[in-house]
Length: 366
Image (tube, rainbow, N blue to C red; front, side, top):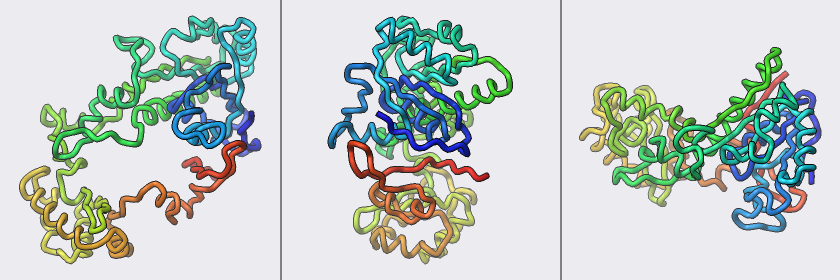
């Protein structure tokens, strides 16, 4: 089965061949981006159930929309890597590949006879990327985990909470995507540059939990400043100031106010016809998470509750002050913002029919 688009010599990774042994979300998203950038990606699944993503969620016909969403642009191949002949077949493919990416638990590839030492012997220029929850070594290397565990350990989930302190589960898998997909992509691209400059291939160890910890910047800043993070909903970017907050509308939707800088807050106050609030801003000494900040937030709660989402969207449309509606996904797919950038199209899948497809977010010009 092939889901690979026509080759495009103008794409930056044209001519790069990637062997993808990953499953579910992190690895497949990384290799999808490589395919979007022009690489030839061969997705290799076992001869049994294959990638678990095939059956996660409703299946319209043959595979789930989850599988469709993260595996565009790839050629599909089934192999039993426990079979000696199939392993030799894979090693022959390794000789002609630039990248191999896997997401098994640490040690599985070695037990299959496909460890880094074996792969490197067959192709010294090969880049191998291993994505795991907790890294290839360390105390937790052999432990199972999912996104919820990675963001919990790294201090991110604790901060994704409202004033009552209960963490809310984000529907953006931060550990899987920031950690597993984007950091793997970053490592692979850096290693490809090194090989292009005459260096050897190398093995990349990506820990999804390490990656979230490394990007958890604002809580790290708080610890360095005061020794501890702020209470939930009381830091600068988590609800502790009225100029950077969410407000419920009369139709039970929400507006996102991001007037973090004073100049934007002043415009926002003018649009709201509350110029008296202009001086009550954190850059003018308002205590973050303090009584005055909460008092102003209460006034804005009452104000935004007087109109619908659409009415407030229309009110703020002509003012550049970082205020926007909180859209549902079905609304985002139809929004002119993304349509004008050709980010969203309807495409036909070979077995699943028409579906919404999101384009690669990085655009190149020659």
